[in-house]
Amino acid sequence: MHLCQVVPYASYPPRRGGDHRTHGIVKEFPSYGDTVTRYCQGGTPETYRSRDLRRRIHIDDGYEEHRHFHPIHELVKAPMLFGYPNVFASNALQLADDGLPELLETADVVMVREPWQMPHVINTTPADTPIVFSSHNVEIERFEDINRPAFDNRTMQRVRELEQAAVTKADAVVCTSERDANVYQKKYETKTPMIIAPNGTYEETIREHCPDSDAARRVRRRYGIDKEAIVCLFMGSDYQPNVEAGKVTIDIARELQTHSKPIHFLIMGSVGNSLDQHSMPPNVTITGYVEDEFEAHFDASNIALNPMLSGGGTNIKLFDYFARGLPVVSTPFGVRGINIRDGGHLKVADTETFPKIISTLSNAPETRKKLGQEGKRLTQTQYTWEISSERIRESLTSILSAYN
Image 1 (cartoon, rainbow, N blue to C red):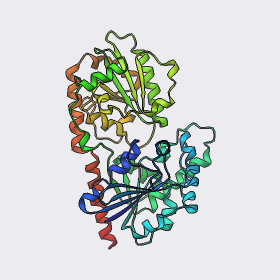
Image 2: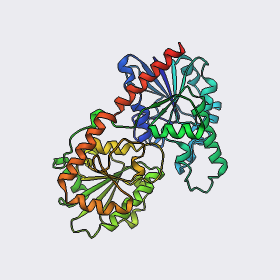
Image 3: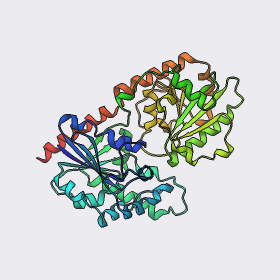
Image 4: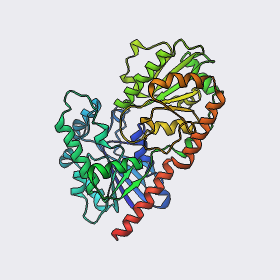
């Protein structure tokens, strides 16, 4: 099978949750002798900061990323930096799609990430080639609460039209959860086959939690964290729902400043770029994007937080926490669409109750350990990219058989 994957921007190496999904759901294909070619419509801010302007990236045998850099692609993506949807991606491809028609012509299957590029891909792909819409979020939900000056009903209507076309005109839809599939079927009255491929983490990242490691101690010393403190970790990219959750984390930290046992909060990732660091309580550390001793930041932590209140899809960070054996406290929104048990795999509560739960867990090391082990076991058996990738491949093989 030759798969052409079409995505809005350079995705390898993956940095954001969406990039991990883009890579993760196809990573097993080459091991079966398949080929994967990814067409990227331009770069990302990280691409340009790193000056990595290679047009072709070799990822593995039979797996490459092709990047088409063009000013118009960056122009139409600029609003994304401020939280707006990428509604003009398909229009830009109509003006500049160098290399894409050839990739679509030679593909056995085409998979498109998110709805923004679908109109052009549908119009350009040969009629006898199946097109799969790979959903990362229910976009109409993701953007329905957006509060931006230039975001009006016309923009929201365009989001709805693009998503509806993607869901109803594709030969199959890949969803992150049964919940998302049900939402699509209800909102858009579609009978398009749904492939459920959950978000997850990489098998290689699943490991024991090592709080007593030298690396964990170094991380605590780097940030001046008391060795006896309970450390709560929140991790995220600079994405509005994460920023909202980061602010909630800071409010929780303020409430626990005077706790009898010192409780410190690490906010890791580019989400820190959008948080006001001038009014930060002393028990909060904003690390920014971390590469040096990334894994040690998990080991330096005792509890992981997932205080999400908005967004779409399912939270990849949840599985990253589980993979490292960390006990997790999450909002109900943060676990929607995930087969999870409150009190068994993690603690689920409204944000108002987070301080009380954190306080209780701070004095219950055995409970923390048990939760961490159960969350890790769940991830190992149900939520890895390898499992999802093989599930998608099996479904695409069936779709191809039907076409042939």
